[in-house]
Image (tube, rainbow, N blue to C red; front, side):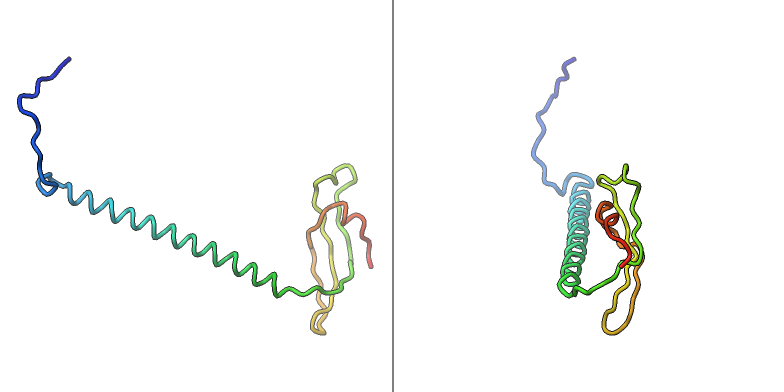
Length: 113
């Protein structure tokens, strides 16, 4: 089917098209809003990683004793995770931590002491 257009379309200004300027403004505002949200998200993620780096930089190595070792059975140790219960002293205060994650084969090799 072929339609015959009696007169070729003429050029019009954007302001003459009903609702065109409003749609253009809404699209621009939506784009700016999405960019602002992405910027805020990137700033939050960056701040998170900077804080993690600062925390790791302040970390101090302390001597500890293994109180208990939890490891899966030998048949399930490959690429598995084990946990340790640890006793340590920091700043003249004794602490205990349960559930320190490590490799299962490493946890199985550690006993109390």
